[in-house]
Length: 160
Image 1 (tube, rainbow, N blue to C red):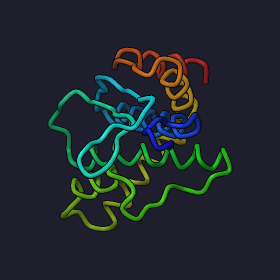
Image 2 (image 1 turned 60 degrees about the horizontal axis):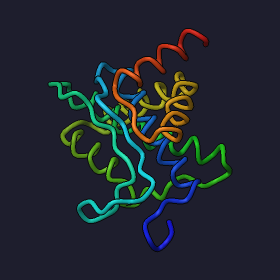
Image 3 (image 1 turned 180 degrees about the horizontal axis):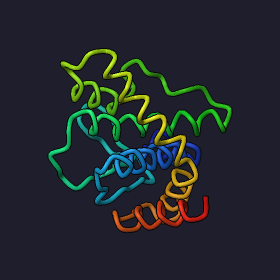
């Protein structure tokens, strides 16, 4: 990121994959996406900076399903990083998503937490073409609504 908080092309690409992962993970486990966005610049939020978001329709989903949707963002970003020859994102306090996911899973056993991550990894892996298509659409238009996300996922499924 440059000093003026404008994201580089690579940073926007990684954020697009991250948000696309959230979309696919959430939709795969019945958590409808309302809208998703990737910014051209990082915006102050809390004690850090935010460069995108995925907003879901509010449901009374089980905490483990919430955690799967959250974990899928970091998993998709790390897969994109590997494709680009970059190391995984720094896990030590770097991800607000990881902290949120962890808060949802408090009280669950380590085995249940690992299972949530396994489900998220499976969703991202099985639907990687949809993750790529959503990321490309985000880079082209910055904002997608939930209906557009679902159309992209359905279109990709029909082809693959």
